[in-house]
Length: 367
Ligand code: DP6
Image (cartoon, rainbow, N blue to C red; front, side, top):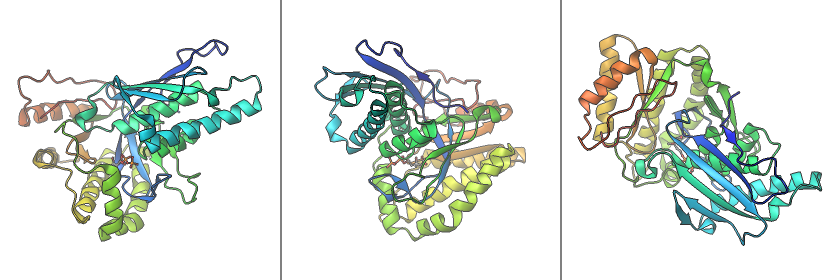
């Protein structure tokens, strides 16, 4: 099973201060979308979801956590700028949940340093522009929880730690694991069964590639958190989606991944993205995340599939206009050529990069 890389800076020197750990976590792209909470405090979703965790090489957050008895309190720097830790209830929840797990370690081992009572300094950096509308909260909370798990030497499995990341941001629980990941909605009121599970390792389907097209780097007008709560409260289509559509789609998507059936995977990915945005449109007042460029990309993907006479490419959009295109390796080069020809970048932008590894990323600011 692949989980995010854990790279402790200093692990053997328990008696030497400071204690620190550095970990990276990648972003993930949902192919069956999470949208809606049944408990906003614990971040318990109304439906299960399924995603693909991208490669760490291109879009990831790298976080260092450091604990010391002499730190007066907790401090956080995001991309070099200090933020107020106490201003984020989610961040405080994540840190206090991890501290409780550490306290249990200390109770079981009286020689373990009392890290659960020390102050924490957290330094977090994205290797992509935070403003680019990509899923930075998912990689951010996944990196923080993985780093705390390493620093605190927590015995919990990656799936168990995903519950802690979930308290930071729902989609973050899926970034704790690599490859194809399902987030089980669960039924328990305390969220104990609402956690991530690896459906298949990345190596299971190396031919599958993802292409990230940055359509706009503007901040979205309606946050996911706010948008999904309005949807739950106002959309009749959403209720139908949760009850009758998603459970069946989760099963079909798992089967498509198991069989490496690209046509089934791609068709369902596009249908679920479309339904998610239809549900946003059915929200009152309506929420429009896609823009004209997004719709033009959608049309181009359908035209490409028609021209080649098979389902060779899929699009998906989260709560913003940026597109993620899935295709098999042999089709991706043609698609990149087509997309760059139809949506040329301004001259000021750097040349497009095309990476060969699975789940590769091609990020082009301002198509
Ligand atoms: C459209 O995880 O950002 O990307 O749990 O409130 O932090 P919170 O929301 P968030 O929502 C992501 C929604 C989505 C779909 C998905 O990733 O499944």
